[in-house]
Image (cartoon, rainbow, N blue to C red; front, side, top):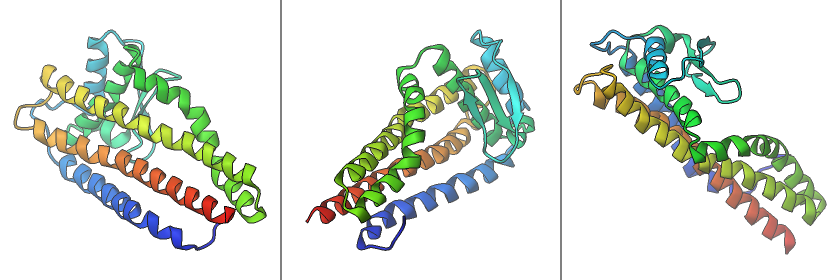
Length: 227
């Protein structure tokens, strides 16, 4: 399904940006994982207190395996934190925990972009799996229908990435307010928590940029095949 063609050069800027974003989030997380917060609250306790303060006492906070695997599951209404974030009293841990709690609040408040993203997820997941096989089968066989189907499936995946951006940015802005309002971080520590959340946001921007670059590449390949 994969072959080299000149359109690969379109992916280079997005790929470089994605590598930078991943390096940035890794280095920032490691840096502020060593910065202990004055309140000594752990990621788990911060998440629990935020949820309870907003009436989400029925949303459990669980440990999940892996590193930076923290997430809120809207289907099961469960907030999951990686072991490091769950037990650490660092700037990085409480920032990530508050961010995921922000997603839980979005869900409870029926935040529209989150609802759109959740509805797009099955289509985007299905589409991202089929997009390239369908497109390149159509490309090699000269079948316009397959190429078009592959492009539309990929557009669904790109829309998911685009809608994810306001969801993540909003969760981060909520997190910063929650951390200050709850007294979990001091004014000196707040910029550090913001740095962690900003670094994490870069990965979502990079994913959207990569998806957009891939779509442009598919469109160019389709048009070249028509000639």
